[in-house]
Length: 437
Picture 1 (cartoon, rainbow, N blue to C red):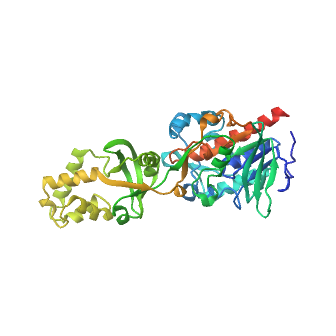
Picture 2 (cartoon, rainbow, N blue to C red):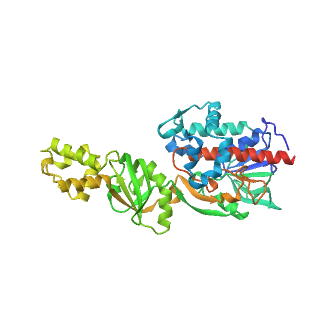
Picture 3 (cartoon, rainbow, N blue to C red):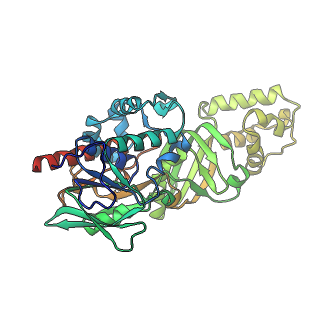
């Protein structure tokens, strides 16, 4: 093993390295830094003009780093594939990540739902400090360098062939290990355009079909357009597929010009995307008053109509729902907006109550994968050793982050997985090279 002087990094034209990391997102930066801190010569190949572009916009620019949930609950947010992450999380989990950033001078704060953010609420602070730490660790970051091919000999990784900006010919980089951390296929403008799937497939790996996860949904009709910009908090959304209920979430949703988004919609979106692909008809039913059962809601409506007996219905409804929803409610229930409260019949009150508990939206589709926060699908997990993240097919090839078939709900879970798998992949690559030396 060659020991690198941490104060001297090889030039971009150097062709021989211990570890090559492909992709400069959170997983790649963490992996590269961990390997370099062990004294290895490490280069990070980033195809964009700078690393961390997607990290800068995560959490609406606030960077939801992780979540305070205990391990067993944390894993459930990844669905069945969450079990694969147990080894990585046991070695580098929430408290380790927070200590890591604290040492870099970035304190954090825990908010509603256990979501953890930097105190500054600036994703750029996380990104810049992570890059600076990677460079201090001795990593050479080579920007505008696109990996075109993994070079394999006798089922062992021996290098990477890449296209470097400004050079006409492809450049060969030799190495003893590669960490593939190219991300998914969402937000391609940040560099996550699915390169890792192509590279992994060429050396024999199976790619589970890639589709959008945590993606906004498109709805039929004009309701969403009329409600554009309206945010509903503390509502329950139930998903119905071909007349059968199969999922629900409580929390906040948002109307957009094309349909709906917001935390609970994004969380439900993966199962909806899959159901739509299978040809199922999807309907959402929004309970605008989930804290009240039918009886209590009916009693509430009776009180409102009695208290404001001479007030027009359209004005009474202002205390029941957001102003923007009133025209939609009146249109869909067929109620007379000018009718005073003391003339509302029991049947009309029933129609209103049913609408408040079952405001319906038909899902017409979903936004493209380029607009998804993360990507579902990726390198098949059964072809990766979960204890080291090394390929079972190609020795010396390691995976980290979203390129694997791993995705979770919103709330900081996906970023923690990126950091944890990056940490484990970098450490595992180090151990493998050390054992060879």
